[in-house]
Image 1: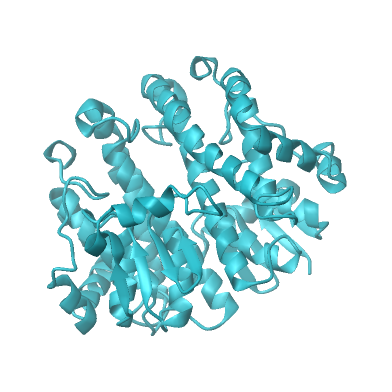
Image 2: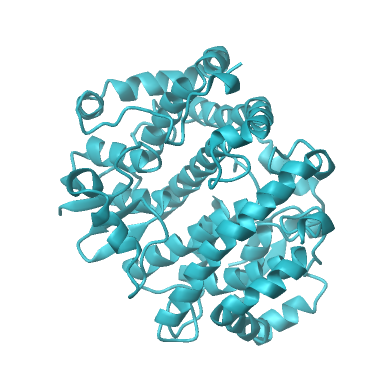
Length: 234
Length: 234
C-alpha cells in the first residue's frame, strides 16, 4: 500500500505525529502537498461532493480517506505493528493518543488564546497569561501522567515492552516543548526523567534518526503549533 | 453487560455525549458518581497502580476501563448499532466525532480562554474576544461542515439512513449552543436547517425523549461546558 499524506507543507504541525509513525514503520508514503504543492490538498478539502475531510492532516489509503490525527494513527498502528493487537490494547492506546491531542490543542492556544484569525502579536497579553497557566497547571498534569505510566509500564515504552505510536507522539511533544519553551522546559524536565529517557531512545531509532536528518523533516518555525516566542518563555 | 459510567455528577459536560448514546441504546448502566457520590470516581483517578484514566468521563465495561469521550463512543457504537459495521465506516464516524470533540473544546474556551484555574469573572475580557472569534469563524466552519454532510448523506442522518452516535452528539451541540448563546444561535440557525431538523428528530426519539424528561438528565448550568453568560451572547 502506498499512502498519501495530506498536510500543510510548511510546518510540522499535527501532520508530524503521522509522519513519525509512517517513518518509523518504513511505510511507502507521499507527502502530497510538499511534493505536488498545496493546491493538490486544498482542492480535496474544497470538494463539494461526498464527505470531504474537515481539516488536514488526512491520509489516503487506497479508497479510504481518513481524517483526524488520532484516527489516522489508530488505522496505521494496527497495520504496522505500532499498536497492540487486542481490542483492549488498541482502545487504551487511542485513549492515550487523544490525551496527547488535547495537550497539542493546549500548546497551540498558548500563542493563540483568542483565536487563529488574529496574529500572535494581537493577542500577546492573553498569550502570556495562558502560557503561565499552561506551565503551572497543564504541563505538570499531562506529562506527570505519562511519567507515571512509564514508571508503571514494566517496559521501556508507555504501554510496556513494545513501541507504539503513542511513544512517537510523546517524543514529538518533548521535541516541541524544548523548541518553543527552552528555558521553561529545561527546568521542568528534571521532573520527568522517564519521559526524557523515552525521547532519547526514540531519537536513536534508525528510521527516526534517518528521518530527522533528511529533508523530508521540516524544521520548527513560527507558523506551526510549537512556536518560540521569547515573551512566553520566562 | 452492565456498564459503569464515571463522570462529574453535577454537569452534563463531556459525559453527556456518552449518556445520550447509552440512553438511545437502552443500555444497562450506572452513572456511578451521581448514585454513589463523587468519591467513587476520584479514588479511581487517584489510584497509584496501573493505568488510571487521565480524566473523566471513563467507562467501565467488564474488565475494560475506557477513557476519552470519542473512544468510549467508538467502543459503544459498535456494540449497540450506533455505528457502521465496516472498518471504513467506523473510521469515518470516529473522524467526525473527533471533529465534534474539537468543537466542544472550543466551546469551553469561549468562557475560559486563559485557563480553568481562574474563574470566568477573572477572564471576562478575553472571553468576549474569544467568543466573537468563535461565532464569526468557528461555528460557521464546524456546523457548516455538518450541514454539508447532512445534505450529501442521502438520508436523515449525518452518514446516511442510519442513526449513529455522531447524530446524538450533534443534537447535544445544538442543545448546548441554544442554551449558552440563545440570541446568537437563534440568528445562526437559519443557516443550518439540516442540522436543526436532525436535532428535532433526535429529540423525538422515544428513548431520548424519556431520558430528557427524567431526573437522570442534569439541567444545563454555569459549571459545565455550555454556560449562559449574558456578556458573551450579543
